[in-house]
Amino acid sequence: MVLVQPGEWRLTQDFSCIADESSVPFETRADSHFVLPLTDFADWMKGRKQPRLEHFYR
Image (cartoon, rainbow, N blue to C red; front, side):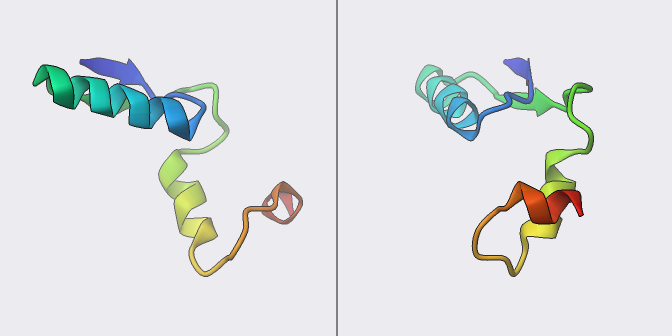
């Protein structure tokens, strides 16, 4: 199963569980609607306690 990266973390988890239960490989692709990849945001979040969009956009 190949999907575009959902915009919500919960959906990614739900699709992953469905794929596991069905024994179907699961893979996501980057979504061009986002300004930057999820991995870049994850790197920015390292060492931060809470995500604050105000700080992210600065």
